[in-house]
Each structure stands twice: as C-alpha cells, then as structure tokens.
Length: 273
Image (cartoon, rainbow, N blue to C red):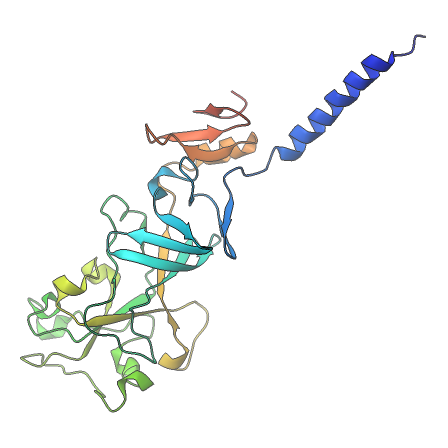
C-alpha cells in the first residue's frame, strides 16, 4: 500500500478547504447591507444591481440614516418589516399630536405611477388633512351623505382634535361644508390616491397607522408616520430558485431584468446553470 506524497497531501487538503469555504458561503447574501441599525435586504437595496429592479433608486444611506425618495420628497425610514412587507417612514414636516405644521411644508405622499402597483400606504394608515379650503377637491362633487372625510381603523379627526397641538382650537367637524369646511379632514389613501397638499389646497397633514391587534386609548398614543405596504413585482419563484442554488437576487442595471448573482458571475436562471 503506497502512501501519498507530501505534495499530493497538501493539494488534497487545499481542495478540501476550498469545498468547505464554498459550502459555507453558499447561502451568504452578497447584496444584504446595513444603514445605521436597519438591515437592507431584498427586494430593497442601496446598491445598483442588487434587490429588485422595481425598487431601484428608492433607498439611500446618508450618514447612517436610511432615506426613501419618491416623487413627493424624501422621508426617513424608521423600520422595514420584512415579515409583514411594510416600511414605516417619517416626514419631518408632518403634524403630530404635539405639533401642527402649516404652510404646505409637508411632503404628503405621491408615488411614481410605475411603482404605485406595489408600493402604497397600508389600508390601516389614515391621513388627516389640515386647513383645506372650501375649493379643495376633497369637498367638490361629494354629496353630504358621501363625504370623503371618515375614520380609518378607529382613527379620525374627531379624536385628533383632542391633541394638545390644537390647544383651544376646533372641537368638532362641520357636517355642512359651505364656506367653512372642517379644519381637519381624515381620509384613507385609497379614496384619493395621492396626498399632494398643493393640489388638495390644504395647509398641512398628519398621518397615523394602527398595528393590529393593538388598540390604543387616544390620539396621544397613536403611531405617527406613514406605514407603506410593499409587494414583490412579478414572479418571486425566480428569486427562490436563485437563492436555492446559493445565488443572490439582483438585476441587470442596463437591461433592467432579473439576474441571479453567483460567485463571480451572473445568470439569467440559477447558479447551477
């Protein structure tokens, strides 16, 4: 029985180490990144070619602060909930329970039409529009019994008036708008499809959302911010197949189509092909 030479032994040992290294890296996500205390993962990205192309040029990491940029402006990202497919974002010029911001400084929320099919405020998110004029589209063409102002997930202007920010201001909303519309009009995003303060002729806005099954006692305990639901466009099976072969989901930045990012090369199918 012959013994292996030292050279052969070393070569076999290096091959073994290489196989262990490859298998250990097989499920490493080469596109996962971090910004401050937030993890940025598929379908989002802060790098060109990573994530899903439908979310390209959406998130930016600025001095360890994750920012979301859409047509209406830039927002700070407070949380990305991958389990429930939702982002929580914050507009610094949005009114809260402790501060009413006027002067049309707020961004509102308007998303590009090509993103709108998979990136929109969650159904339990309420927008409370402040200081809208009688000429606002909110109050035009709606018979009194079909007013757009209403509660969403148990939240609305009637309760919001109880916030300290209003001081001794309005205590109830008018049912007959006439020349004196209510100081606050609460709407669901689906009712108007865009929160544009200029087009709606409003001075400011607030936004709050409800996280089931939590039930809070009043507007002082509401969660203020914009809760945005997202979905993965197209067929997610491509990404699952890619990840199953040790790849990372990405896209071609030029042709804008799905790519499976493998170790040193890219594939239009999987890393096994």
